[in-house]
Image 1 (spheres, rainbow, N blue to C red):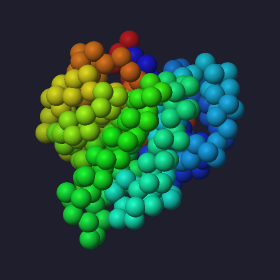
Image 2 (cartoon, protein in one colour):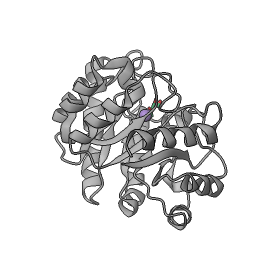
Image 3 (cartoon, helix red, strand yellow):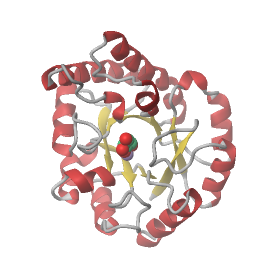
Length: 269
Ligand code: LER
Ligand code: MN
């Protein structure tokens, strides 16, 4: 099992990112605790020094399995489904801007809240059509560089577009690109899926990335999810990717990261 944890390259507002701030010190700690990779949350790739990021990550023996893009929604309001065509175009461009770094690292590019929400005055069908169009454009741009894109079903309290696996699989059909798959997150699945294991099986080889947090969005082991069963089901699909920790930094970031890896390695040792 390859384990990573979410690390932000900028100070971020998103609460479930355990590590914000001093990048190299955090990478060193994460590597020291035995993680194999860091999932990087990058608001704007044009504002980070990709060579320096890679130098730091490689110096500590870590990989970058995924790049999170949601800060561009949270902090700039970019989305694929904004009524303003310039905002939609900027969101598509932002994803395309992530492609070169993703190609260098082998990371998947995550479409989380960058898809947006159905805004007042916009019909669900219209928002869905903009979403499909944007994902087709981004998937095509990524495919030219051998990069994969993942859409994360996100619970109903955060978005009104694609809350569960059934909707995610229908979207995959609509987009029709081999390099477009799903990111499953146990926190969202616990809210939206009737049976988490059945939904993982339904996705099969379309699971390209996996987030873990417990039912309360604390580190795995702090809530009531059955990670032995959930991860066993995931690996039985043939999944070879990373299991990436995205949880609240509670009781503090360092403790949550250490408890998560200790628990998951104990389950699967
Ligand atoms: C991001 O991966 C996520 O899970 C969302 O809850 C972001 O709001
Ligand atoms: Mn997530």
